[in-house]
Image (cartoon, rainbow, N blue to C red; front, side):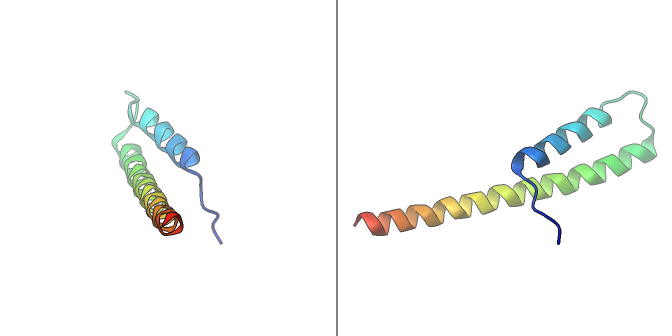
Length: 68
């Protein structure tokens, strides 16, 4: 089973890929590979943020019902 990466780990990975993509010595084949990897990380980050938003919404609903 693959362990879930933290937001910081995902963001750091994306930052590292973006740094590599900015290299002037990067060939097109490597750039395409890095771009695909970056797209996967962006999707993971979006999913992470969506899950966090859903959890916050759930907690707000619980808090609201508890406060009433």
